Image 1: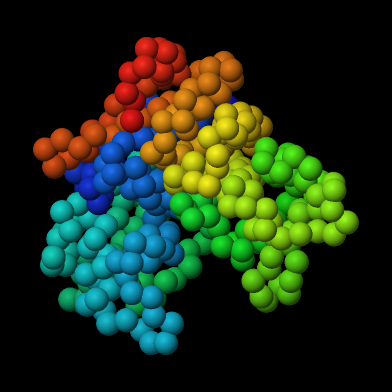
Image 2 (image 1 turned 120 degrees about the horizontal axis):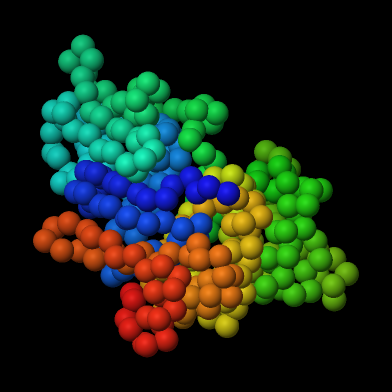
Length: 335
């Protein structure tokens, strides 16, 4: 199965004046020092997959608290336009109508986001050539899913919300994908037999698991952060089928002793569900587990990407599965 992206180029987006990652695999692990841009690569991929969907752009700003959340009244347009300028390299302080950033590759169509003006008012355009749309700067507008380049699922460092997770579960319940989610959950909870979400559809529903030794289902969160984290990753893998799965700080809440099993499951899912996985980590144990799983997988589709900041720009250094094996064996620092 062909990869959705075999290389990535990001221009003028956030910390990246110009970043080129010359090789991508089916499963990619991104490492680097704090503020090197690991999470920013995931943001760029969300924009690329959604073809610059308006709601994705809003979500990126809200998640970094660059855009105030206001349900009571509309935000002032000048505050919103200032917030959107945070997406552009150098954080321009004025809306000149001439800023743009680009995400894609040399061989695939790129997603463009451009500032402009219509009747003297600030406007943001987003999309690919021939499919540009206007981003509504007044509120978080929805964007038709069928116009996206590919499905994508994003797992933030603190995991899914219950409402988001339950929405995914409703789409896969009673299918073979349900069994796949339970199988991954058994990495940490080996006696888990079934899971479900309980509660009213209009409320925040609770994930529960039926364990072999328990007579009644119990809340997944009561089993610990690791179980809840792995459930979120499993749901992301099935919901991203045929597209991208993006996992920020994948090691969060997961003990190093089970990280190899998690990577084994991710490699299996990437092949079975035709997903391209991108994850970030700070953990050396996580990198070692990734290397061991990639060596056992033997498909040579694992790539480690290290980001380094030099002279105000970020550069990438890529290690293939074979190169990563040598580096790990020789004790070379790859973080």
